[in-house]
Length: 288
Image (cartoon, rainbow, N blue to C red; front, top):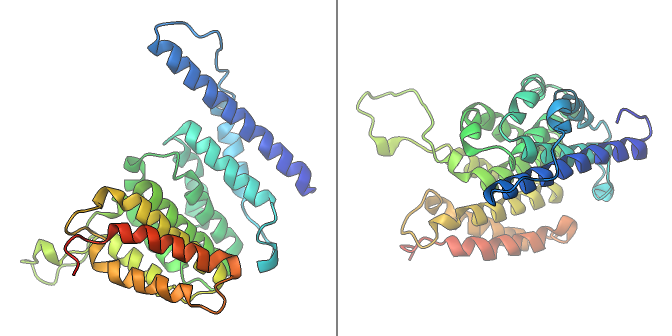
């Protein structure tokens, strides 16, 4: 994994990802046999659980990609890409305990002055989101989201793109974690509950404000809106939802995307139309 030759490092990373997937399958089989009140013939050796304390911090470090962004090489497979996938596989296998294993990396690099380290930390957080519970996310979301919002306007295109990716992953897997009221200083002790804002509000407002970004992060923003539409299906047909007050602005922004002269880059126009089709299903029933 530490090899100076990227193809060797990638194969080593893929090896551990495959081991993890095999162990996950074994555990699924064991659970199935238990439900059938039978004894499984296969036992898990727990290689991943035992080695994760060493492997995950190493994978986190391998996320740091020092190469300059090149829009013509965004499809190339790098060590950092393989590490992202491997961390995601580990997270789905280990669940919430994986957060403890990346915490130091996030704490050190999430607001780093170094763009490469910052992007790695943002990507690392996004990689674990499918594997951890919403309860786990809720423990940290109010500390992490303000940084992700700030990074949406970072000088580095890679940081901006990764931040949009994380927002999309949160929309996809933990949308309800954003539907909490954020703490603000009260100017009036008699402040009405309706005057408070949801954590979701500044997230979507800044995301919409970034719609004029370059095609690479812009296409990821369009994908994030797709994820919002998919994650928000639970609100479909309700008269008002937390998404309602932003609905018209989201649609307008997506329509502008489809008209951009550079819409053919990074599938921006295609992703925008896809997002538009999906988000229209979330139109508030009271919309006139």
